[in-house]
Image (cartoon, rainbow, N blue to C red):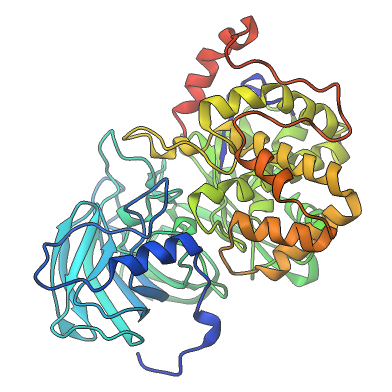
Length: 522
């Protein structure tokens, strides 16, 4: 995710049973596993309650006791984005402990019925969980299918961020960080990635596009059903469905990669100068970190005021305004496009193990955004990092260190997207490159995305790999940069200084209004 700037000056820093496949067992973060294990059996006599996998920033997000293998989502769009969609969510999962009940994350919409392995199950809500009680308990290591018939409501109150985004002609999705479960029942945590099949039925005249590749289009009477499937596991927060009066623009990327963009039909020609840049941007990213990790890519340009751009897997979401407002320099718009593209490796293919590991996603996307601007537009990386260093202590004081972001107030859950996980985290990567040298750093980057493809590793995994690649002990160095209250000295740059967070500057004071405007986005 990247907040959409209103002016360049507002940027925080310039510039069913079968053999259980082993590959389906994704490594969970050790802290989450420990918490989940401690919860033990969900006793039938205990009251239904919301559970979680122990994420520091989202305590009730995700659920213990099972590992989702796949989601099958079906949505029926009524022809207006102000009424609920009829939906069916089918979840195939392996249990990882004995379960009398199964908790799903689901907080918005009406549940009509639930089945477990084809038999009716009872259900009730507890907090933002849907608690399902099957006829028979589920044994550890069993394969189960849960089918929920429900509505998916695109209209929210003032306290809800994310989920469905109402566009000028339909809907799109923006589920990061914790809003997929307001759209469909799920295990809403990036540590449990799964395959997705998505079906959308809409009146003729609309076009539906979702993550992955199309597998079927069925036209019947006055409606059309589109089916899409992913070829790689995906975190729930990266799901995307676009429904609108759209044009799908096709072209070919590197190695024959299918590139498809989804744009308002009326803006097809207007947006083409931007859309045609994507294949070359993919080639540039591949030159830095290796082969593009998915089956397709493209831009979803939505006529909606989201306040951000979002790296939904294989189909990144952008505000139309980014490409049509003349105030944004061309180099800057291209760099933002690369930011979301870089997320396909960092954040999508390699997802954060916990939300405190967000710096690994946003920091890397910011790094390649800045590197692209340096190489293509002469915007020096060193200048941007020096400016970030000057602000780093203020960012740490306000939002916490990069790898330990502060929790946010109720109703402000997406407030974790602060400068400390963007330029503050890119600054950590700059310091690491300074410390171990550019050749080792570049090997680290390539190895990281290759070794952890389709997985959800943690900060500890990154530090361990950095040590392996560099042949150096980096615990102390990375501990200070990732978790310290103060920014450590920058290797090789002794003259760099960070401003005292206790002494507001005039420049900072004049930026308060702009910062507040940014905060209205995610």
